[in-house]
Length: 121
Image (cartoon, rainbow, N blue to C red; front, side):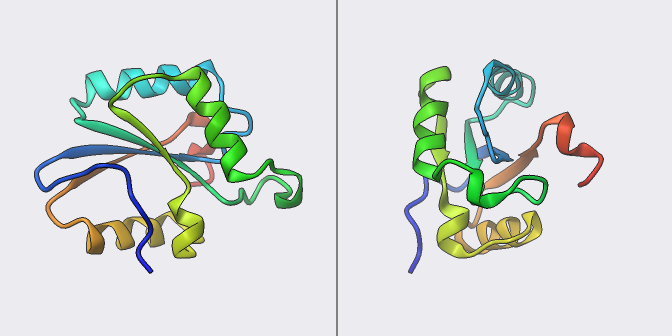
């Protein structure tokens, strides 16, 4: 089964902002606004991950709850919030990117991540 993805089309340049977003905060919103502008993105997808190797998964709020909280801090029609990684069973970023490359031909994806994950990436 192919999950429902945010709007996309060949030729688009879409930023992928992955994270657990627990909790989503103004720093995430700022990174999103800067990425849209500076990287000249058509869209930005927040990919709310099902887990985080540095956090206890049983203590994370549901993906739906984290998406709802994210929508409260960032309202921009170019930004979409999705938990599709859980639906495709992706465990690693490379799996997510490979899946998107296969299922979204012609879309140019740009990976966005917070500095808190840079050392482990």
